[in-house]
Length: 284
Image (cartoon, rainbow, N blue to C red; front, side, top):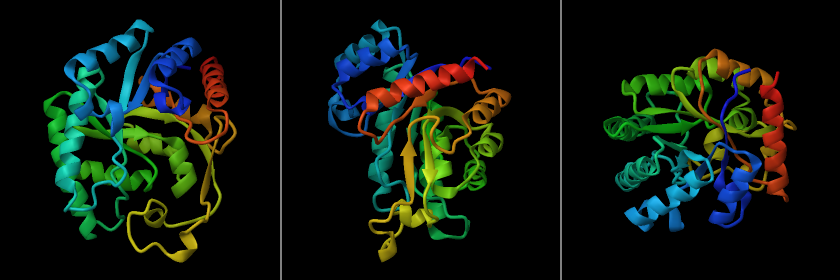
């Protein structure tokens, strides 16, 4: 199988930045992804000099930035908030270029299956503006899979008729929320995939993604406190990774598999397990 470069989301280690960079390198990672939405790594808090220092710290460890995470936590379904969110997203795209990556991943909200839904057009307009900006600077704004089926996402991306918005394929989100097949999702979205997350999980209960992701309010009472999915260490969930990675190879994808671990009591152990799991699969 193709030897995909393996990355790690910096924040998954849950340790200080410099220590996390060194730990990723010690594991043998080829790159890292970093959250850049708030705090010290937000674009408004990193001067040109600080950006260069951070980039050199990563390069000195023999790694690159696979992508930045620009998920602002609310998507682009609110026309009143969108001007602010779009402007912030553009600054994150600028930061990505300064850190020598051209990919920013994010959640854009839940795309309605009904194209006549008012939110569909609102999301289209926001993503088209970001697509045009990303294209102009040689970057990609990568929508993370999960809140909707792959076929719905593809139709939405096709409707933009602009190449700056692409896909960050997270197979676990598809399994955990929509119950979609991540292998089939690769085939459907193959022309758009520029980055992937290596994450695993199981779906525990059926639910409406619009409520699970809090895209609409009020949320029915039965959604409060109910577990709809569980993230698992790589190889212990329902993502068929061997078939999934083979599908990526068949699709001509040569980018990163970036390990993400959002839960668990021992993230370092789980990340090591994930790294070893992916390496073994690449030997097959």
